[in-house]
Length: 343
Figure 1 (cartoon, rainbow, N blue to C red):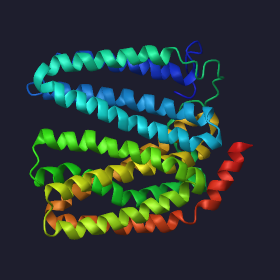
Figure 2: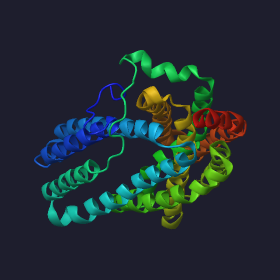
Figure 3: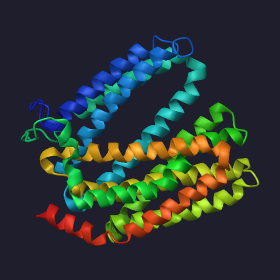
Figure 4: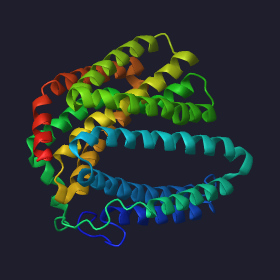
């Protein structure tokens, strides 16, 4: 629907992004009237709706990037997008954690709603894709799977799944590791969301020139091998238990590696998306990839009490190694995609 329908006066993809900002602001305002401790199901329902809005905006932004960025700008664009996610985590995380205890739930959520609506005005004045022709396929469930007929897309998916084994398992275990190390819930949230986002922001920006110089596949291979070393090292340390310093390092490195992988993989994916169904191809890939990685993270968390953290991390290291070696053979297909996209 995003690729096919829009309001031309606002811009093809920007219309969806603007509509999402309004919906998010309203949902946050409604959420402020429910105490999450006393109305958990209202909270869950609102978060589901918010997640749907955010996913719609994410798909719209992806379509905008596919059609609006030239091949030479894609690594920079994806790095800035990852950095933007990290920056929002820093600002919102620090904002909520520090103000919640002083100002209360309702006031803090009101302020978040106001911030979202203010950002609506900023987006409104950017021309971006105003006047772009709408040329998407007729909406259908099968449209989502057209991109997977391309062997290059399937190849990238396998790389992301295997490289993501180490990343998803370590990233998914962060909260458990922090609590087991003796951090309070508020401290764990501060470390994971704020400090971790700082590490992610720096990693995303530092990796961008490397992607420009080497290409996405070699960088994914490097990240995969670094992730394997990281998983093996902390798997050994876990056997004797982690102190607060080691736990902090574990979290920061997990975030840095995860955010560094975004510019590498997303810049490749942008080249594989069909411009006539840009949002569909991009979001379909991310959704399928996300299902696998969330299952891995959930399984790892569930098994950590059964077979120990160390074994889980070593399993992730093995997967990342496989992904790294597969990525080493992807350079040719990336160059081919860039050449086609450039034409």
